[in-house]
Every structure is written in structure tokens, then in C-alpha cells.
Image (cartoon, rainbow, N blue to C red):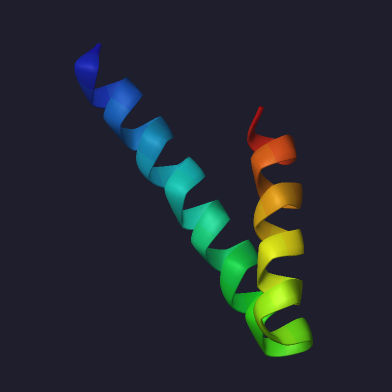
Length: 44
């Protein structure tokens, strides 16, 4: 059971990192912040 929680958390963290990297490439610091806020909304 704990393994599933870990895998889910790892996947959500990877999605946040991906959103952050794409946002940084496309919009710099402000784009990264906007992408991370969007990613947080998607994860919730």
C-alpha cells in the first residue's frame, strides 16, 4: 500500500518538474512560476 503512495507522489513530482522546465524554457522565470501554479492546480 505504501508503495502505491510513493509511486503516485513521485509521478506528481515529475509532472511538476516537467511543467516547471517547459515554463522556464518558454517564459523564463515568470513563465516557470505560472507553469508551476498551473501544475499545482492540475495535481489537486
